[in-house]
Length: 283
Image (cartoon, rainbow, N blue to C red; front, side, top):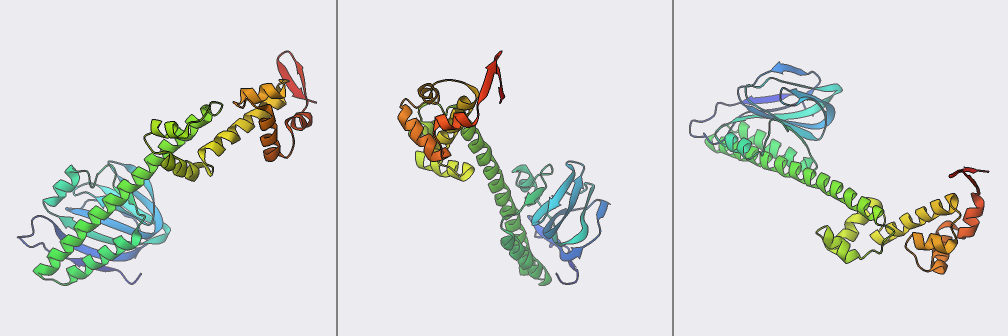
């Protein structure tokens, strides 16, 4: 990044909705501590790591690419680690900011946004800075438009990240549900409908989560349980097959051999146990 740049502008009287009052960029190496600003600010960290601390959030770790919002008349501190970070920033004010806050597009308790599309945001910051250099009514109006787009882009990326986190949590719950029901017959269409999606969608998302389609995952869980039963009980092979939901012991033995490279009896012989008083130990 080039040497530090900074522009400050007094907003036009007619630009009450949204006005950019400053913009800049720098390679930051020192922290900002216990500062208050009279306006809103957005800070983009393109590369680097550090921290952000506000009264509303406490101290948070920060890793670029990310941006964070600063609220007027609120004490805040932030700074990079010893390697510094590449930073762009903008100051803004106006009545539109009340709408941003009311609609929770920017939130004091969630000021930090991890970015997945950095190029888009860098381009918007660059255009905003260039517009502010053009000290005309049109330039200031265009800078305000760029700031508005930065707000929307960050909100969309934050929403997308939240959706992905919810999807991962939901998928983890689905995986655990199938694990618990693995010994029962699986009707994939009915199981998917139970979780509000089509069989194709569930199969795709399940495979992304586990590396296996649902039925292959179910079979793996069944075979793992079969190994546990073979190693820790003296149940007959056909009984073990039935206990894992397979009524055909020949099919069970064939599948077991394909997966483990040995028959169920050979597997049991490898892990003999001595029984007594309800416990076992390996010979």
